[in-house]
Length: 296
Image (cartoon, rainbow, N blue to C red; front, side):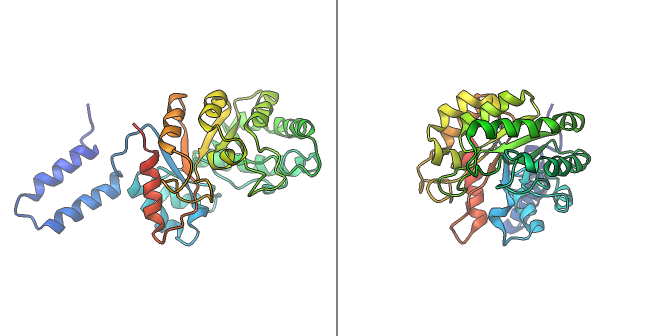
C-alpha cells in the first residue's frame, strides 16, 4: 500500500484542493513546494550524490536545498563541521572525508601509517554517530616505489584499521585517480592494482572508488572493467572526458550505458556527479547530469 504522503498522492491532493478556478501561478507554487519536500520522481535505480567541491561558489546551505529539489540524496566529500547542514535538509554524505594526509601522502609510505591510523580512528566514532558508513582514503604518490611494494605497504597500514572499521561499521574507500593528467605519480591509478590491494587486505571493509573520469583516461574499457571488478567497488564518481566537465554529448563517454552496466552488477550504493560545470548555470548542468544517469 502506498503511503498517503507519496509524491503521487500529494500531487493529487494539491490538484483537488486547487480547483479549476485557481490562478495558474498559485498551483505552480504549490507544486514547487511539494517538489521541495518530496523531490522529483526519479526512476530509483541509481542513488544520486554530488561532490560539493565542484560547486565551490554556492553556499552549502543553498546547495543542499537545490540538491533536495533535484532528488539528489547525498552531498559528499564533506567533513564533520559540514554534516549538520546535510542533516538539516534530510540529506546524507555518501562518502565523507575528514581524515588522512591528503592525496599525495597515503598508505603506501610506512612513515605515514601512525599518523593515518590515528587520524582515521579518531574519525570513525564521529562517522558512526552521524549515521555514515564510509570514508575516503588514498594510496599516496609512488616517489620511485614499485607497485608491488606500494601495494604491500598499503595493505600493512590499512589492515591496522580494519578492526576499528569493523567495530564502527565503516568501509574505507580508496579512490582510483589518473596519474596521466591530474594526479601525477599517484599509485592507485589502475583498477587491477586496486583490486589486487583488496585481495591482499581481504576485508569487506575496504573497497575502491571507481572514478569513471579518471579510469577512462588511464584504461578506457569502462563497462567491461566495471563488470569484471565490481565486487571490489564501493562507490562511483562521474566526469566528462576530456576536460572533466558536463557528462553530456560534448564528451566521449555515454553515461546511460555505463549506469545500466552498474545497475546490472547489483550495485545498491551511490553514484556521485563530480564534473566541473562549464556553463554559467551550474545547477542546470548538475540537474542534467542527474537526468542522464537516472536510468530505468
